[in-house]
Length: 193
Image (cartoon, rainbow, N blue to C red; front, side, top):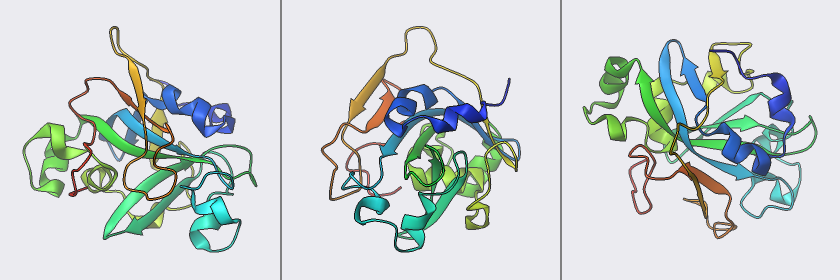
């Protein structure tokens, strides 16, 4: 499979949201298909770190060059975001869930569970299963060890939208997309990321 072209990361995060579903995310031979993501649109988006402007480490990260990774820790979990839009324009996609396809034994060991449906069903679970470390923050997709490969929806798969999960402001906006009926997406009310 081919790596995603860098031009993809110049898209507006809302435009990129359905397009990232089905693409393949790998880190050191472990990964799978993206089945759920959320978009964050910058200074006008009440759910975004950049909502109040460019002040603070998390906010500044959203202004990085497109295709760079923004990893941060929250509630003891590391979350993975991909920066979109030209540098200086804040926008990102939070990768919320994967369908695990490679490195299942490593994922099971890291997570301490056997149910593959729950290995990467949530942003914290996903990063733990892949072994992503906070030290990867600021690195670039496909220029470093984290790869995003071309892929798409399978025949019969459909994209659904909903409000975002786990935030207080802007959660009612339909900025979360997922593959309908995928058994690998995160669930509302599931407090164990």
